[in-house]
Image (cartoon, rainbow, N blue to C red; front, side):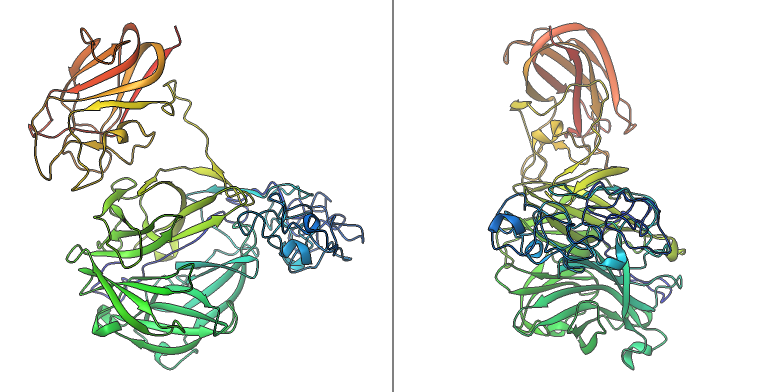
Length: 611
């Protein structure tokens, strides 16, 4: 978070998956036991919390559980089949307990972790071929998540935002400011313990999950006893991030190291032989002589690693290349967006681009998150564009989680919803990012579903009576801003209210009227239009007077079917008109609510029927 003047105002966080056991996590495949650890007949291990039924993942306690075994046939273990096959070497507990079977673990499938076959481990594996099942002692949904297991089935979880997330023992997950790492066939969530309701350092905790839903508390991996420096009463530790060094075989953690009034402003470095073991302090220092606060850590596909942190009293973002052992700075390769006062960075990589997501520096208060892209870590980085709404749904960037599946990769925006001064009441918000070339879109979902096996996600569609926009195309627009910000006309029909079309303002400021013409892909008898103004809290470009046209010609629209005036509210406005058949629509903004030259539109929707 931003520079804070009091030690009580601490900690910026990064947190991962929010499907808290019982409150946000329904598993449709792979975890044993309906109601938790209790199913004893088929794939569960009797435990204190859990049901007594036998509906867990196939793989139970018999020697025949879990198809697969140690056969050399490539398909059986899932190491070549895109669906993974039924994975796991057979054992009395339904497969090798920790890894879900020797061939199941090897199931690299098309995307590395595809498929998590039945029978792997006591939890029934992770469905359709590859990564391992949960350990025997952690089988099933600890507080009632349904499980169906079985060969070839997918692990599908429901992520519910807004609730507290609990671990498998029923305790609140304490891992704020966190980072995630996928290693040893599981996700590890590492973050700050805020249970003492203070920004000051208590501990860095580690949790483990095989499904991004059921989180087992592993260990407080850094405590006040880890070093004399950490025992200081005013110590502040924020945003721990961990990557693995393939050469040294060490897990390396970088974090924000600070003291009273955030005056220390250093980076801290720690290492461990195991991801969830005790970490040893290596150093704390100011990289290249720069102040260092909110940070993130990134390991590229070629094994090179990078550290990014807020510098110069948060005014700048300093990007560094790390040494080969990841424990020191090799060089500073950039100072990004000087003077822009950004913090809470997170880095992700797609096939073609790198992205940095960050927030403004407004303390514990939420603000407009932004993002930029580049074709290499050394840049050149683009200018910053808005992400989400004006407060990013009352969150601050924490981490971007890539979930690599057999069919695709989903990138999860993991944000912290800070509650100051009640820091222990802070929550985790996870939302799927939509990625298109150099564009990121983030929308709000109360809940959404993630197929951990395939990497696909879904959310309930908006059944609001308006036509789907998937086949719409831009015919023409008189002006759009793509230099100062990335606000093209297509944002007006991208099914996202977090983006908007904005007319030029950087190199020119053409006066209204401004217009956009859209091809609906087919003719419809249209009866209404809905206008959604920009949702980021800024009024620039909001439409006052307008005209709306419908036609079967892209160039001859005749008389407007509706004219009128919009107010200053940001609530979407629906207007109706006498049914008019046409394939093309034309929206003309005649004036702006404050008399400015701009026009901005978040969404244009229309309702009607096929003639």
